[in-house]
Length: 260
Image 1 (cartoon, rainbow, N blue to C red):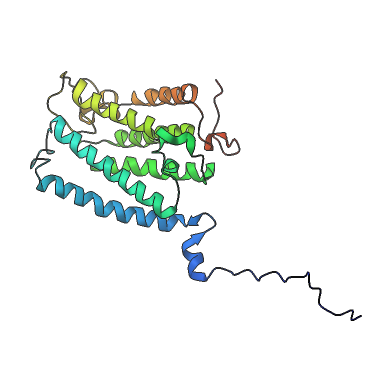
Image 2: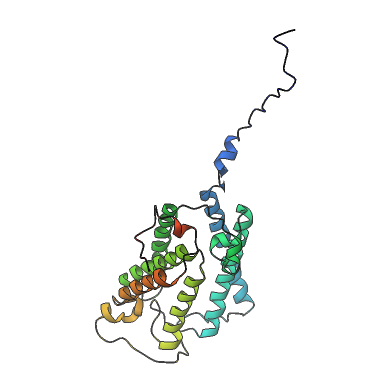
């Protein structure tokens, strides 16, 4: 008997095929790398937003100069609605590119229970939240009549919105609060919203006293009194919103938890 005869039951293991350098540049363990995803999303937003605005004005869906000075509710509603639809479209496109369910992006609240996918860690979430929030505040600098306090309060408000996303895994609470805030300022109380004034409001008000307290021409977000309101909203989120996001269960990186 030949002791060196090959064992017929033995089958050599296939040599693993390593991804190419080009593949590793674009893809990681979780699929398309975040930097490329961000570039694609920015490119889509930069393309689709101007197209949507141009079509709205060319078709007179938004009349010329309707958004200048003191706009009325309908053009504002159409403009904000188009922005939301573009955001939803870009989010859907990115979900197809990244091969993830739409619920991962915070816009799938109606069927969130059917998708529990979450590839983010808490530290990454809050790093991104800080960057996005202060970017959100900086963008408000283009609004007429905005003040330094208003910019800071806008950034802090964005962090509160991020907290609601962290808690629930959904953006709908933040969308609803932001919409209600802007509508109430602009068309219910008739105060300035980031320095902008609007027509056809129910009440007519004007600021009295020091701008740092009244908000002045900026509106309520330019007042220091917004800070306790934001703190109260934080407590509302922690005590009332259900902790349905997988991120909120990651206690290793979770900020100070308030137990009900």
